[in-house]
Amino acid sequence: MIIEDELPTQRMLKNLIAGLRPEWSVEAAVGSVADAIEWFGENEQPDLIFSDIQLTDGTCFEIYEQISVRSFIIFTTAYDEYAVQAFKVNSVDYLLKPVSVEMLEKAIEKFESYQSTGNRSVPDMKELMESLLSGKINYRSRLMVSVADGFVKVDVKDVAFFHSSNKVTSATTFHKKNYIVDLTLDKLEMQLNPELFFRANRQFILNINSITKIENWFNGKLVAKTRPEAAEKIIISRERARAFKEWIDR
Image 1 (spheres, rainbow, N blue to C red):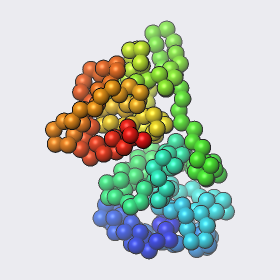
Image 2 (image 1 turned 45 degrees about the vertical axis):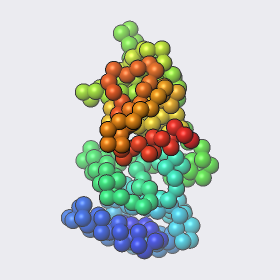
Image 3 (image 1 turned 180 degrees about the vertical axis):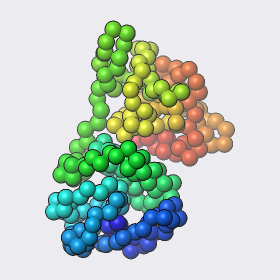
Image 4 (image 1 turned 120 degrees about the horizontal axis):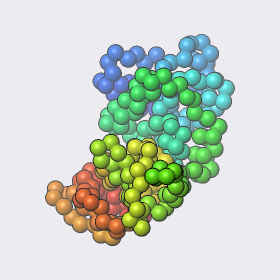
């Protein structure tokens, strides 16, 4: 199901979904709170909903306050990426408009992963709405990591960078201590404050306070130098370079 008040976006989503998953069927596309509530009252709930936030007659949360939704939801929104980190923290995916086929593919794969594992957790819509409207987002501030004789607490602000290698994630602190973290970089990226941390590439998430120098590299790529120094070169792709510079210069 698609809940979207912009007809061009409705059509685009339908076409993209048809291209990526031709075996899927879009059962409905509605553009208002009232139409969505009426549709839910007359039909079985779909497996997946693509839901805009701001609709012609209110927000999508007005729908979910009246209808107990059991479907997976992927939000499509024009809110900027930092405002919608709340959805990531609450394990809900989102697509920032204009929707790209690459991001849609990733969101669909996440849905399919949840579906295959039987994960049917439903987000707290009230909490999501309050987080978005207030701008208050609760990012991870601590990590509990295992050591030889037990566990220790590591403050996130003390981590210079996170690194992934051979499916193992480690945290390196400014005091050059290394800890194994029981989270993937993808999970960490969802939970860390984007003002403080940046996903440089598949292997690294960097704390802004660890960066000492940025060097130009081949084909528009960049190399980030950190303190403490990483064991391998931290390369930012040409596609990520602009976002990285803007993050540094914010």
